[in-house]
Image 1: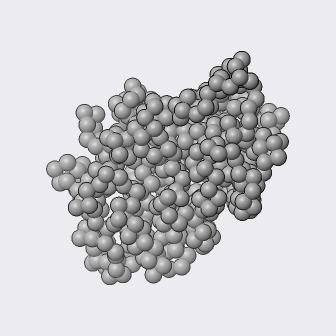
Image 2: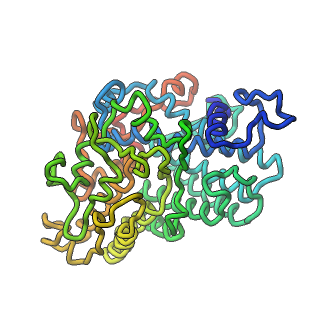
Image 3: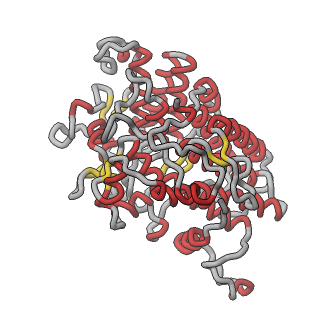
Length: 479
C-alpha cells in the first residue's frame, strides 16, 4: 500500500475555487500544475479537505445508503449493489478515497507543516481530519491499518483489530484537542476552507467525533459526556462548501442532475414513506412519522423530489442536492441526537426526552433546512405522556423508554440521510428489534454488514486479513 498526493484533486479544486494560479507567479512559470512533485503544506491541506468531501459525501455515502435502505439502485452497477451483487474491484476507488485522497494528504500536511516549523493548531486540524478519515474507514471495513499507515516506506502495513483502532482514534482526537488549545501555528489564511482555522469550531468537531465513535462502540456514557463538549451551534457544523463551478458543485447534484448515472439510483420507497405526508403520493402512508405535534412536509420537500426517474434527492437551488448546497459531514444536528440517544441510554428517560426536545426546538426554527415554508413546519415539544402506552408515540404498547428510543433512532435515520452514519446506525442497532428502524434486506434475509476489502489491497498487501470477510460478516464492534 503506497500513498501519494492526488494531484488531480488538488488541481481541480484550485481551478474551481478560483484560488491563486499555480503558474501566475514568476517563480512558478515552469511548474506543471498537473504533476507537482512537492508543494507547501497549505496546498496539501486544501487537497486533504477536498478528499474528505469526496469520502464523506460521494460514492461511499451512496453505497452506504443502499446498504442501509435509504437508496435503491435501478440500473447498471447500482442495481447490482441493491441486490448485494458486489465484487472486490467495486471497492478499489472507495478504498483510495479513504487512504489516499483523505488520509495520506492529511498526514502529508502535518509532516510538511512541521518541516516548516508550523505545529499547534495546524497539527490539531490535520489530526481531526485523520481521525475523521480512519474512523470512517474502520466503521466501513472493520480491521484496517493504523500504526504503520502513515509510514510511506512500509509497503505492507499491518491491519489492527477494529476495537483497538477505535481506542487509538480517541487518543488521536485527544491529541488534536490539546494541539488546538495552544492557539498557535494556525495554517495560512484560506488553506483551511472548512473553518478558516476557527479553533473553537475544530475543537467542537473533535468532541462530536469522539462522541460518534463512542456511539459506534456502544459506550453511551462516554458518548454523552463527549457530546456535551461537541458542536454547540449550527454555524460550527462541518459542512462541505459548494459553488457553481462544475467541479466544485455538490456531489449529489453532480451525480443526480449533471451526470449520466443519475437514472441509476433513486431514494427508497421506505424512507420516502417515513417523510411523505401525502396519502396519494406516499408509497405507504402508514409509515408516515408525522402526528399532532409533527409536520414533516417542509423537510420532505427540502430532501426529495419526484421526477421522471422516481423519487430522488431534491436538486433544486437551495434544496438538499442543489448545485451550491453545502453537504453535511459532522453537524450540530448529529450532536443533538447523540445527546438524545446516549442521554437516554446512559442517564435515563428524562434526559433523553429533554435532549430530543432540544433537537425539536432547533427544527421548529427551521433547523438545517433551507427555503422552507414555515406553514409546513411543526416540531412541538413532546411530553412524557406521549410515550406512555396509547400516547401518540406509543400506539403498540412498548415501554416508555423503548418508545422514546424508537423515536430517536428514526429521527437519526432521517436527519442523517445521505451520510455514512445511517449505515453505521443500522448495524449498531440491528439486534434491538423492538426499537430499531425496520430496514429490511432487498434480497435474502441478511443486511450488508461492511464494505469488503478491495482487489487493489488484496493484490498488494500481504497483511490483508485472511480469510477475507464477506459483505455479510459483521465487523467486530457490531457482533
